[in-house]
Amino acid sequence: MSGVRERGEGAMASATSGGPGAGNAGASAGNRGPGAGNGASGGAGAGDRGPGAGNGASGGAGAGDGGLGARDGGPDRGHRRPAGLDDVTVQALGKLSEALETVERVRGHLYSMHQLTGTADFMLDEAVSLFMQGGHTAIAERIERELIGRNVVPGRWTFQLVEEYDDGYYREFRQMEQDARDELAGGRRHLYEAELKERRRTHGRRGHEALPG
Image (cartoon, rainbow, N blue to C red; front, side, top):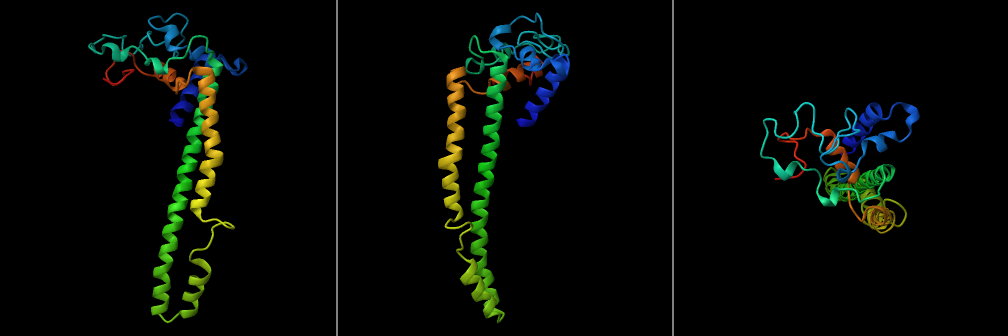
């Protein structure tokens, strides 16, 4: 999803910002709320279609692809920006959400480290047994004494690292993102992505519906 967002931001910058000096014009020109522009395309530039403006390639809803009905009417209520929420704030919430998604990936890697370290530790049991069978008692005993069950950092196995990460940094990060959405957007999620989808999909074409059937 990050890749999609980055491409979307790049497209907005080139198609709608009017050049480097336009600052956040990509957000202000390209992030009209779905509720603000349904059924109208006035003021939308190339590549910045409102939810009701259709797509030049498809000829608009009903061009050989009828029967989509409500599925092509734009985002559901939970993904429409509240009245008065400006473009820059939608963009800021989107960036905060993207940061949280990155932290979720970090957490996944941390759990991978936790499980893989445990797997490696149990593999040492077999290594010790084989060294013993091969007559390398000193090496086997050293592994058993110094390495098996060793802390990965002072005083901690990996499960303790995972718990501290979850209870500290990760919990605070999630709460911060939730608080920002609650305060500014009524708790609604992925507003930036929902509006990006409206700009990039081909309106009125099967496979490009706003909502599932």
